[in-house]
Amino acid sequence: MNLIHTFEFTVISILYLFTIIQTMNLVYGNGEYRRKYVTVFLVYLISGIVCSWFRNHDKPVIFLTATICYYAFLLICILSIFKSKKLWSVYISVIVLILDSIFQSIGCILIDLFVQDFDRATVLNFSSMIFNIVVLILLRFLQKNHQNQIRNSIRLLPKRLYILILIVLVFIGELCGNMAVESSELFFDNKINSFLTVLTIMAFLTIIISFVFSSISRQYYESILGIMEKQMVGQVEHYQKINKLTDDLREFRHDYKNHMICLQATLEKRQLDEALDYVKSITKQEIIDANKFSSGNQIADSILSEKSESAANIGTQIQFSGFISDEIPAVDLCTMLSNALDNAIEACEKLSLTDSAVITVKCAVVQNVQVIKLSNPNPDNKNSTETSKLDKDNHGFGLYNIRRTVEKLGGEMRIPKQFPEFVLELEFPIK
Image 1: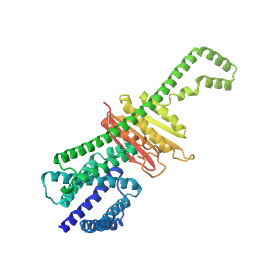
Image 2: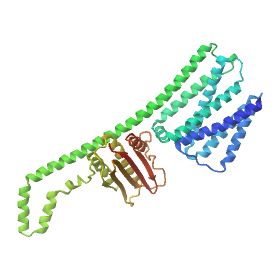
Image 3: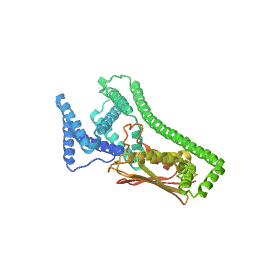
């Protein structure tokens, strides 16, 4: 029987490894594989076999030592694969193992409600196999259909929530472990109480999951609100410039006759330089600059004007060409264009002062499809989809907001190039 349990635990060990690796791949991308890690895998499996073989040993010290070695090699293996995400590798490994332990305990509790005498080790192993297989199937489905949403949603969660989840799962695991001991040691003599406690634990887990999704939604809509507030400020400033332009034109029209008389007198005296200076003074160059973007969409012109000033402060220029439909909902246009330009300006801030930075925005409407292509320099050969700002809890989901908005409009977001130039392409139908 011990040989059978050893085989079962070896299979479970392999499932543990694949479950954790696939979870990390879903959340943070593929690991850094190397051939030498085959040795690590083999040592890990051997430690699992040793742990299983001595799990029923008369000396608890031997079992404890083997167990510690087993989990230590598991973490070493995961850390070797995901070198750049050591903290998250440990966190996800612990979460997976705790959830597996909870599932094992619940399996024993449910079996104990109907069967008095059963092989506890077999139930534990069988429950663990079911848990890992179900999780692997779920991870495969999420990777295929919702990978981008999962990765961006993870970034929306505040760090304190991760700590809370870990603490809650540890307490649930301890409670389930106490309930799942042998019948003679069971703290709950009444099976109805045991069943109700299991239901309470499941309800508690459901509440935690709901809380996670609620937190993601709150962070998302807070980010949208922040974007809209900034855009409203930009809109107000843009309209203030338009009002100033209107006032200047009224003033100019009022004094037009006097200006012409003065200009005529200057020209009659053949004072060409004085006449040219006078013309420059009355035309006011800033009036021309105030309306430098003409995309066909007033909201887009406002956004481009505001971001152009921000870009100019860091020595960057925004070059726009093309047409943007005025049938795009204002909120959606603000989300897409503002986030895209903010990310581009953030990337240009990394450039040295001697480098000339240009952000290019090309737009067109082709067969009722709005096309927006934005490109900017990417100074380092790194993933430009992650923010470089220190406050990562409140930043870093600009592209997530853009993708979600484009997909809501029935379109598609693509990033065909990241280095040495970052290119963002948006396509969505115009209704």
